[in-house]
Image (cartoon, rainbow, N blue to C red; front, top):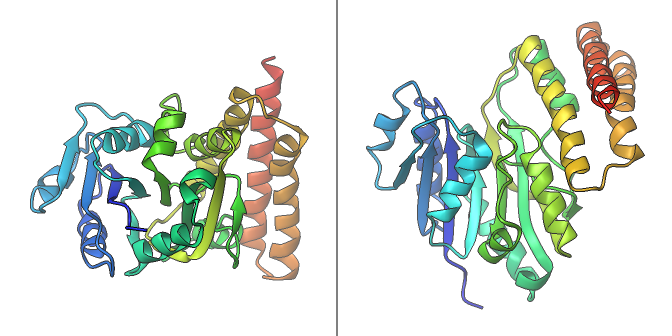
Length: 285
């Protein structure tokens, strides 16, 4: 089977320092993409000027639209049969596209059965307690083996064009970076497709958190994960109780395995924040 034409889409906001490394990582792939599209989401730094120095397609949003809408703009302006989404702070390993293509080719009828294939992000910045917590408890990976999953991580995912067209792309209702990847995964699986995770598809994630930013991310993730399942009529007890139970288990792990009270304290704050979100969410009904 001839390999599909590949388009890489990168939503980008205020990444003037790291976006050149991401683009260079794509240009140096063992199997090069047919086109690279960066959607600048109304950056306020020099990102747009930096992007003009590369022979790639650049789309500039007049207003900040968020990652879901930016990914859609990139997808709708692409020519590829296979759309690869990478975040603007995620550097692709040199064989990322090669690995994704291999996984698709392993399934002869991938266009009928596989709705998308994604990989993992390896956190490269571990400076703060929040960074340590994220590396332990919020890894963007689904384990050490290739497997079916419910959704693909936004920082490293790919979908056949026909699948994205069938489900209508990302739901732009999700304004911020929370819930849009879960929602897309639900809708693709409801169409009868499978989503495949492979740990060999790797990006290196350059992101750092403070305790404040981490708690805000956890709050948003909890809220929009609930909304994604409710909007698609598949909310169940597991989605409600899971986000509450996990931080309690995290505390035990932090104390008895890592012997780190500062991380355990942060786990308790995550528990309190998630519990508050879930309580307020259902109190509105």
